[in-house]
Image (cartoon, rainbow, N blue to C red; front, side):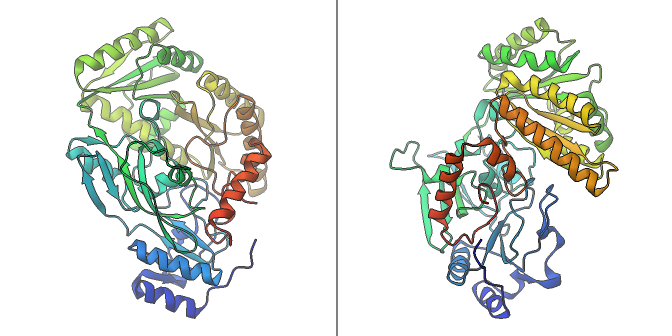
Length: 467
């Protein structure tokens, strides 16, 4: 790693001249939350935090950092789960959350232009009030859109609509040397050279700062219906998913869940789940322009589920019926987190046909290692969220069990033709497993891309593919 410059009082003075006094945080004014993200156990304090309000401020700060070899860490809402926003080398942290303006709704081109600090839930509310729809739907609605772009966030609607990358039309970037670059735009098609926009999406703040994004919108579906389907076993539930996909009636979402996680959610929310008759469930959602369109889609799927062993079928066709189910599903992460002293996550993605095999492997691993492991996930796209729980283990035991469980799970995912992360990224925590899963030439190519964007390696070092 380069020999980064230690930040001095003179540097802090320059930061204050670029922004203003109250938006430059040093010493005791730096909140503890800036030292970590939502889940990662990795902690490191930045020497200074600057809360920016414009592309111009980011550009000036990056030019100064580049000229003076100061390391920089981008930061959004801090809801990440892999340590991508941890300031490993300390230095300067640039907080983007004050860049939180919705800039333009272009109804002719069906685009929304926003700054990176706008929250996902704010985007959803703004466009839905106006009859439009932004489909990416990761579980953490208080994440910023900049963070979603950084990790190429997916979520429950990915099975039908795709992920964040599919809804980013254009980006305004600040490069590590402070230069401002526009990539993409409002055009629907573009075959004009390499797609730098798509390269930035999912790069976890290692290549450039995103200071503006043009997002693609769709007309808002007028109706939606959810199906909660209990099965005797998880194998039967997940084994039904390929049959649903083959029927060509693609649901908006296909989630799987087990009874023990539902119980955690009940305790966390303080409200009962609509049904507890089974050990495993599929939760499906359908949306469309009319009730008839949705009924045509889910009627066939319902028959498939019953033919493959479903115990029953609960139709939630009103907000009153569907909201408690989806609130419970949305609370799974926090509910599991609240049931233990510490946890870490594996968010592997495997082909849909191998989801059950991986989940059964996890069940066996829990018994073999004598630790608690809980899981749920997106059965429709093969993305699983598996949580290893610390409970009362001491530091040494926890480190040993965590490393062992992760190593075995990532190895199994690789055997099943899967990948290390479906939507949460690599950050700091998952780098060793990325190295094991990728062809060495692919990793070397990624490092050359990083060097092309950031030859001094000042922007978010130690993350993703870096040593």
